[in-house]
Image 1 (tube, rainbow, N blue to C red):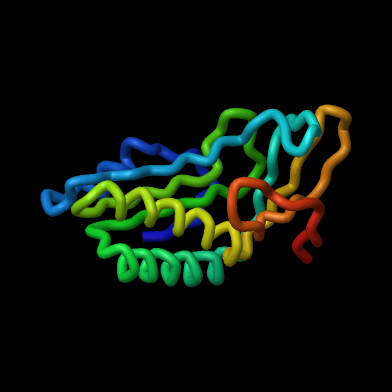
Image 2 (image 1 turned 90 degrees about the horizontal axis):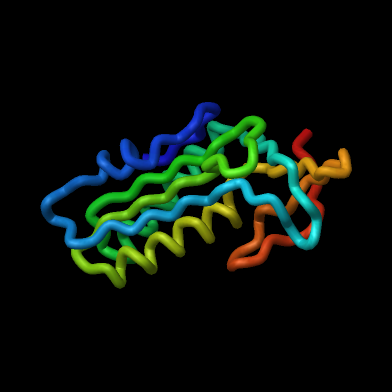
Length: 150
């Protein structure tokens, strides 16, 4: 299940949906709004998404992960709207028979989501300035400014 949500996420409820006696491991990832990015003090974030395509592509990513890592279950949700510091922006959960596959799959899903989903992030800085940030970067570090959605 891949969803786009305009409301706050409940990680415990999302994880409960993955419960399955075939799984020996559950790995989750939570992406939170932090107060700094690339040296800039951040006040809040704003996410926009083209939901029909994001959900379709998100489902493809989850299916790829299930196949590649022999997963028992997968779920992911990305927030939209104006989020404050500390709020949960993205949640990914996977279950597998073994922990190695679960860890690898969770990393795969978040990296592919950042690279492939039509989701745009606008940072609001304490200075009052704003900037669209490139979310389509794999790995640990985001890129610079990106073109905002039309």
